[in-house]
Length: 445
Image 1: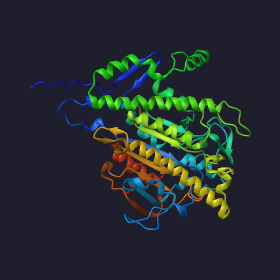
Image 2: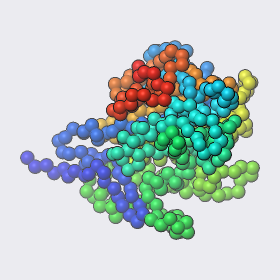
Image 3: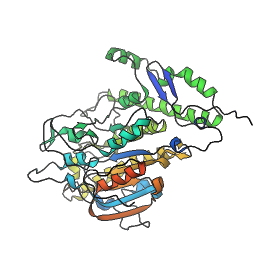
Image 4: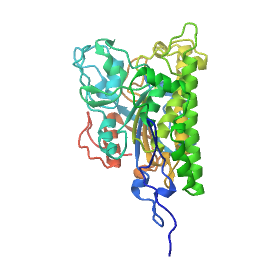
């Protein structure tokens, strides 16, 4: 019997001048007559962080178990209900002040969210917390990918000095720590993320880089010949997948250029970094699309996404809100302020729904990217008005992955360490971790 199917190597790249374009998983990368191997659709891990707490009575379902109503803040996720686990009772106990430390809950919240470790109170360069769980996962999963992890944010990361009552800005600028003393910067510029993924000019000369950008050429122009050759050599199914993927790359580029053009315009009473889209929604969606491309091409299997820094003073103009976000969260029980914070909370979960929808609609092996991903969404503060680090808003997305059943609201005993959840996730990824942060046991999911 003759076999006409020609296998394409899984790690196939299209190359041009200063450009390396990874490919998504294609049918032609799986041997003829073979079932897709376990490695064809690897498990991936995402963390999505929202700052300043959440209005908890609009987040927490009244019922436990599988029969519960989605509260207003979770309502945008209705289409993904069967994949959701709403986890109540979890705490980041190391976010609390220790003896003599006093204020600084926002800095401690960001520092503890992925480390489970209490940060040293310092304004200097002798900061210390713990290695974050994403970096523990990246150390193992990154052995098989071009990038071990991506750290993405929506706020400027250049802030230095002291940010919160005697705590270094290093704690507030990131969620991710390669070691207890090495913070990982969160990149908020879409072009910087794009060029990290797809390459840039071989020269670091800013003048040459500007000249290349001014040519207004897509990365696809640099790999045009490789694209044509590959499209001619694959079947109709793979041709359709490739065309859809390349269209997505070009669309992301177009939106990056549009954002750069908009940010260069004169706008009254509003400052924003060069190259960043003008609204939270535009910026968030662009960064989400970059994350999906990174997973689709298996450039990385670990992404941390910081929707906002703690003490974020962003103004959500698209919601018609003129107040700064962080002061609003200190609402002092003012119903009008609470209503505005709820609007912002819902916008955040709408962006999560956008991410999940993109993942679900992107084929990956025998399913979709969403079928092969575990995601943790939440905050290290529950009540932003009082800086509470207990009974946190934590959502686990990944029903079906590793035998975990979704569509439930699970309440754990009060002060159960969130680090217990991270131990369980590492088990599902096959990464042995005996102790992490303030963990006490595996979490039953």
